[in-house]
Image 1 (cartoon, rainbow over the protein chains, first blue to last red):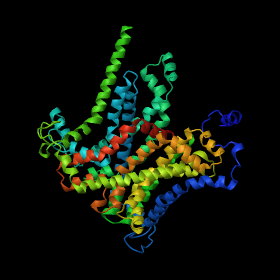
Image 2: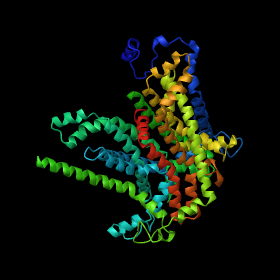
Image 3: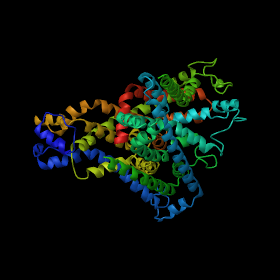
Image 4: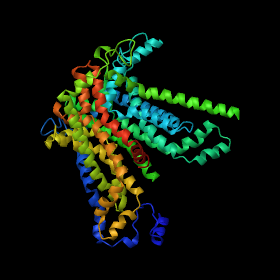
Amino acid sequence: MEFTRVNRTTAPEAVAPATETVPPSRRGRRPFTVRRLAPYGYLSPTALLIIVLMVIPIVMVASYSFKDNAIVEENPVFTGLANYTKVLTDSTFLVALKNTFIFISLSTVAHLILGLVFAMLLNTPLLSGVTKAIFRIVYILPWLFTIAVIAVIWRLLLDPAGVVNYILTVVGLAQHGVNWLSSPNTALWALTFINIWCGYPFFMISILAGLQGIPNDLYEAASVDGANAFQRFRNVTIPQLAPVLISMAVLDLIWTSQQFALIWMTTGGGPLNVTEMLSTYTYKQAFSDYEFSTASASAVIVLLLTMILAFFYVRRLQRER
Amino acid sequence: MRTRRKQRIGAKIGVIAGLVVGALFAGLPVLWMLSTSFKANGEVFQTPPRLITKGFSFNAYQHILSDASQLRFFLNSYIVALSVTALTLLVAILASYGFSRFNFPLKRSINAVIVSVQAVPPITLVIPYFGLVVALHLYNTYPGLILTHMVFTLPYAIIMTTAYFNTLPRELDESVKVDGAGGWTALWRILVPISVPGLIAVGVYTFMISWNEYLFALTLTRTDDMRTVPIGIQLLMGQHSYEWNQMMAMSILGSIPVLVLFLIFQRRFIGGLTAGAVKA
């Protein structure tokens, strides 16, 4: 930054990258207060929206969570932590917590592995650019469909009479059609599989960009040192990708924990709560049972859990800068 | 020499085999959806399954496209997604200019707030939104949906646009200011026109998020004439739960806008997306 500033005053025609500092010579052209207030002016619409759509709602949901019969009654009574005790001792909530944990950790690990494998295949120097471009479009496809469509596709494929069961019986892996999404033994795994299928492309795209950013010299240097393909992968690719992989993993944990539409449209949290997640639990409390107070307590717990993850993500981003 | 060439060919076959397996994993479910949309409903679960059946026809599409209540879902989705895109771009351009070209106290904190907004769970927000939207008489209206969708689209748009503005040299906007114009003119006359490629990526992503949004559309609208495409697909699932061919046709029609946008702007889109996600 220091370098570009010096460079700019000595050779103003040289195009320097945008930096956060203003050259001293430009300062004071406009009244000092205008310059100081200008950025707040540009940010005011954003600030207003964030206050209306984020700050006020969070205050509202927090206050609902300490009251009885929020939203439903005009003047709900303050009840302290009663709603939190109710939620935290509800066995369904605890099951939802466990299911969410299984669902998000399996999804994230699988997204990471699939994303890495596919990105490395697509990054191969052995095939032409056109071939790779076609494969890349096919690989991104699952990510381009809205969750409602994903749900419909997999309900068709996983139907007891559907094509997945047909193949499994022909191969001999199953005797008769399995009702993947309605059987308590399989529903959570089937749901996790669908989520893996529709979520890996985002990882793949980011990892691919990361792979293309690794300087070739590193691989060449490793080859000169006699490293084989696996050693190059372990000692060059993985360390170089680590920042991207970690950021993506944290983001994915956050996003997957927020998954609602897919669960709602495939299993609805059933059968027997085996696919109940924090999101569906909260939704049902609010919009099926109209228990807005307990729903709010659950929503605040979900927010706190997410904030722990988000804290690590934001800190990582700011450290990288 | 010969063993090296053999190794190379072996590696190539391995890579192609891997790519094909992956492509089947990703593509077959989509192909099956497409194929089902052309079947007669009685043929959907026939054994052995076939990609193209005797009853191949466009009937399912005709049925959806001649049904006014189905078309209404599309109209609603377009109105909401296009409004969200326009408003998001406008607000994000202003904010990104502030972030990219000014230094001010609180900059880091405000930026951290915007990044963390992305992490706030929609399920936490939907309860107070329900209360707010009803209180503001926006329940079951377009503005209610447009406003609430922006909570998802804005943070990402600001991060991506700021990253794009940061790649443009400051001399560009300073050159107009020499002529006595202010930052406002520099932004709209110089910065925005040059940034069109980056803004397209932001716009496409914003449109996708809004077009695909489900939870708010489900809770903040009530009547069928206000529902968007994702809810429309779900309603089709409930009404005639066994009209699989129509459900698939509706799904494909509902996916076309996003697919087309993605194919046209693929390169820019992926570039902009990774710039925003990884480097932020």
